[in-house]
Image 1 (cartoon, rainbow, N blue to C red):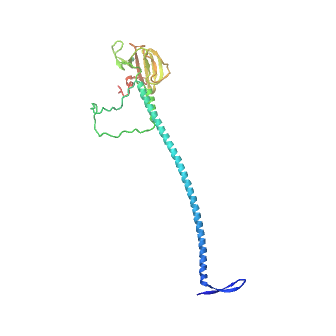
Image 2: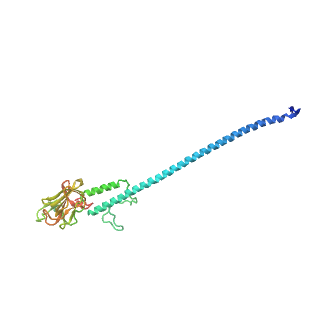
Image 3: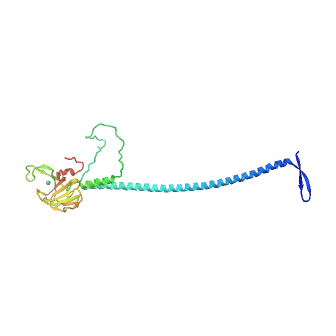
Length: 299
Ligand SMILES: [Zn+2]
């Protein structure tokens, strides 16, 4: 056993003592190790704490960012909802306007005495169609879809304006007594004369309506025509209302389709009360019957 002598000096006495040197050899590294471990542990704990704090701050920042993101998304969603509903409302308003425009068109045509025939007529089911034929192909189940362009209202508005600007329908609701073209002299029943308008039977004093909107270009007496009103319309058209008993408009006056221009009479070269009605295109007289109804084939 390795032993060494240790001299212990105190104020009272001095004595020597034998100590096991192996114990000292053990104790030193143990203490050193313990100190080292303590330092390491302290550093580790510090680092861990720092890391924890760091992570907590990062988490809080991330959480804040998420909250902001959610808020932004919420705002965007609300804006989108508003935009969508306002878009839908705008579309609905446009459709409503379109419906009203179509209603106006129909009312206008009806008021003008214009009978609009459908473009295509489907024969009643279960009955043979006497006027059909042609090559046969499989029935198509696809329905045509009209693309919504948004210009419908404008187009319909233009259409209505165009319709109102050209002579259309009846100036007077009476039977036709003389057509456009060559005819025998109405006074003698002999010979042939050209009749440049359409005659309607009627009673004196019945209202005569303009067949289109426009501007009165003449209102007075003319040889042969008697008391007569001429109205200029768009697209080079003008209309003439002759043999009137009374005139209700003045030259230069703007009138709307359906306005009363005067009253039926028998002034001028006339065999009896009637309206002589002319339609002119760029000054040339054309058959007014072509303008009494839509879809009539031009003669
Ligand atoms: Zn006539």
